[in-house]
Length: 415
Ligand SMILES: Cc1ncc(COP(=O)(O)O)c(C=O)c1O
Image (cartoon, rainbow, N blue to C red; front, side, top):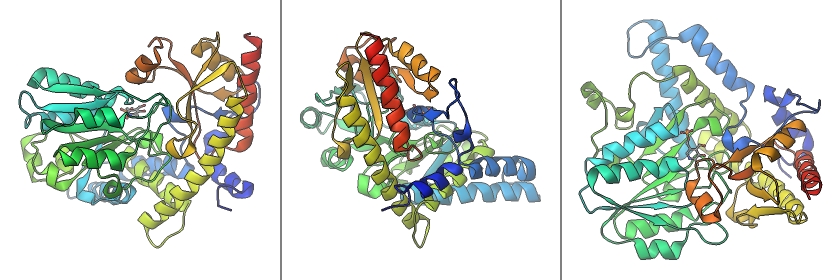
């Protein structure tokens, strides 16, 4: 049916990732069910980073060859990132990670906000799109309104509607929960927010490995993500609508005002090797699809990824449903989620579960994942949290089955 759903081509895809050769504690190949914490990288990302450091390493904007080449590496990355989010290259911002970029951008907006202005955040979000707003609110005497989640762990739109008013300046929300995989209806939320004149500020970190980002379709004004979650190196990437960026005074050194809008928000010297790796990661993703240009290739690639991952999700969800000792937190609806699953196993500490899986060569995560609102809603202690199993497109159905078998065995022995 698709490139990814047929095993020979999935084998080709997997062949691009050297880490998938790793063997684990019991001698079998490692299953990377830890993907929401960060994905593995294809060879071309490693090669691009090494090539940059070996052949072009320099600072920017000089008059000798290596520095001109470095400028070109960054310019290429802006073009690739622009295609990745569906925007213009001067609206792209690179940084160390999503969290630092977000603190920085939110500080820049803060100067324009006045006491009594309101910010909406959600209980579904990672703290990186909550805590910076709380700190800003303290400094600027703003009001932060928290929107709760529904029983199946989606953003509660009724609550959102009730909280919106002409005082609302920002609606900040995630495009996908990093803890339980929900994908809220972003375009609906954007329309609701724009109706009262609010800016829409989205966290795409947990969305980017699974679904195509198109800022026009999403209707957002600011979007942030992390290339290390979508097959690239550790770095941060943001997009800001040009007209909005032009209204802000970035937290930057004075001469930076002469740069294009997005670039103005980049503080200090970036990791050029990581930026070279970001281009290679986007190029890798595009190589999974067909099309006349990078954007169309990405469209096609993501539709293949979504289809393959939905199959993995359906299989995993059916397997978990058959295990009475295991609780799935969140929706069963594969159209409203990605393949990140938050689980609790009766009588089993999530850390012990992750160790059990590691002994079977399965990497997974335990904890709260800075999804404080979700943990509070589930009334789970932050220090304990949940077990998180997350797949990306290089996972196979056999791997899903191996994870299910290991969880089933753990559920039985702990009775
Ligand atoms: C949904 C979500 N938002 C934000 C972040 C923070 O990203 P970064 O590590 O790039 O700061 C994470 C990290 O796990 C995340 O999962």
